[in-house]
Length: 277
Image (cartoon, rainbow, N blue to C red; front, top):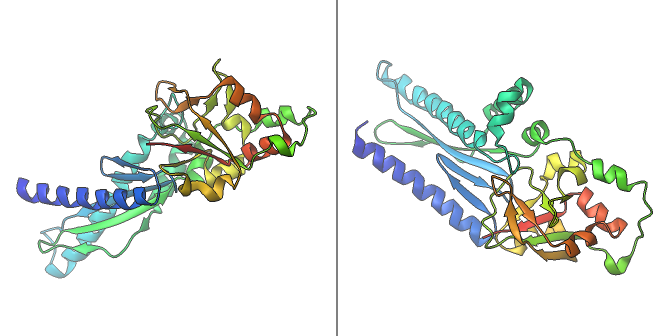
């Protein structure tokens, strides 16, 4: 394939992903454009497009099938590169965990091989095939990657904390706009002393695997169903961690989170959202 053909195909993919991003942003969804695809952080879905070229050594009848097979292989490769680079925490990326644990590596690889196709393959005049695919980060991938959860909730079970309707909320929205907060699978909220006041230590693992520890969005409408009709709204003070994924909130706001049983419950159920640019 000559440079011009490669350029035109690359440009077509950019247009596709830009169109997806624009539509998603209109819905308040947070979509991150990455090399080879995009990540919808509101729904926690990784998207990519595989490109396959026909094997010229095969008969014309077999070339179409060979191009589709090559597109599927390329789609898997692109998904793998995207997921490896995803921030897991404010200090690590997914690839770190895959290198350290064969169990995690095998789980991630197996899940990505089971990707879903989106729409029909596109057959080009030159025999090339493009295949749009996606895979969910929630479920098996989060289940393999998330650190131990819920230890702080276990500690709070022994304390006498009131159920106070006047100080209770259905969820939490953290306004992170303007802070350059980066997306992550396991972000944390910290008080001004750097103590975790929400994150893996505060959630039910099964719920976190299914929903993610936080939901990201560019408009509050994107996560209204998650945080309920009376969310606790706070302003983030700054991003934290080497990857800028954690968010610092004021000590006064941090105290509210553990002030009632209902607030502990919404944290346990991961009813927390980050409002981002």
